[in-house]
Length: 326
Image: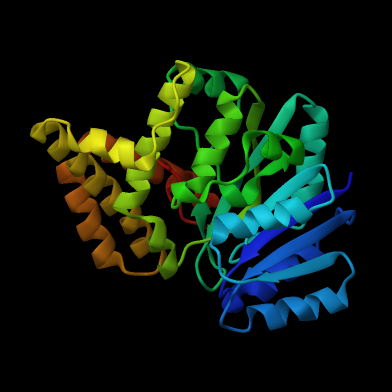
């Protein structure tokens, strides 16, 4: 099966060679790699052009900086395959990623999208731990849909049908950060079948710049996505960001303070995982402590999962890192 690997790259010089080498090392060789350089100011485009000259399966598109959503939309529009494999520029694929995902979607022809689990690595490529399996069954997806929940996948593990991506309208930049979450949920709630393949097929890099998405804006956008799901399920138009924020600001003060408390706990917890991954243990402990104080109901179950995963992974010498998205 022919597959298009699509990547948006912006100032990714430190990790591009690792990514491209992992693509060329795939055991499934019937693919193209479409990489959009989104106006990088470092050597990213030069590196990509070198790989393009080296292997005819690699196509590089250069454009002025428009943001990751626009770059991915450009790459997918240029892709020639029916199936699109997404990848981030600072991560790497296991050699059998394409092979295993192709087998999975062929064994489950009802699927429009399949994701996988990830191995967490640090900036130097050292394994930190492995993600906790979620949404690996039809039942788990259906339960989340019945509850109107926001459903998340690791973007760099997704294999999806191009026609489904086009049908729901592609990435929407206004949902950044969180435009991938918006896309998954439009696909899920449009009635397409999705699933997480219970295999570790991608290495997800946790490094200092990962904190860029750990913001209140991301949490705000997740709530906006949730409101969009709520409205669509009831046949109502999606609220614009302006209308959504206006409605949020009209909430009673205590409710707004509670939302801020929950957001702050989430941000502290997620930043703690980054501190831990980058060796800042004291910062991690301090962030976890404050997260627990603000929202023990959220933090304690995830800490238990971390401890349980770490104990389970000790047999292979790795440490567990949380992969919870909300």
